[in-house]
Length: 304
Figure 1 (cartoon, one colour):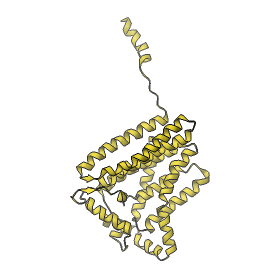
Figure 2: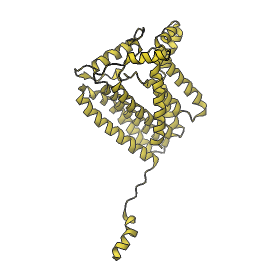
Figure 3: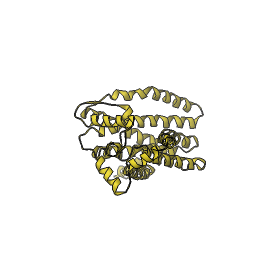
Figure 4: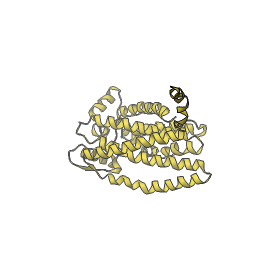
């Protein structure tokens, strides 16, 4: 009886107490999530006969270099450079692992819903073809539109590195978390409601890249085995992942007064260019904006 009275008092002193920092919690959360997703993708790719996954291994030399830099910066007093190396590692892993999601999601024989998306645009009194043809009347504006569409990569780099270099790595972590969340939701939507793009249903002459996407989607929706094509992994029409990237990038830079306006302006140009270049329906853009808001809300809680 005496021992029973003492144990509740002293037993907690011998139990390990684990207190993780925000940095460690983020690493644990995203590490487990990416590991689970990578294992799941390997099994799913085998089930749907998607081959050529070995191409993803091409990122490992770069990861090895980044890991070496991370270790070196940890041994030296370079905390900000260490954070940059760490976020670069996570960004490479997230990019390559999520790149498999969309081809796997597209490995089904569900009918394309392009006609439905075009009809929804019609109810909104909107036409991607009209916007694309109007812009095409001016070669200079058309070239500017293509440049704006390509601003996504510089914006991604800015959202990854500027917050970290300026001492706000939490914003970069939230950006990575939001991208991962948006990709998972988009992959589910792509599997249920596949679509190609406005050039399928509207009077738009597809570019070489758009024609390549259409051909690759056709192979993915066939019953025959298909090899992974890294050049056409961005095969999402609804919702527009270009819009998601643009909004999330501007959101990551919102705390920096001197570049906040430039970030939102560049993001706005990217959003508009998804229409003027003929890549997306109007409803694709609206869905991308809604998904961005959802991803931001979840990322705020996931990457505290």
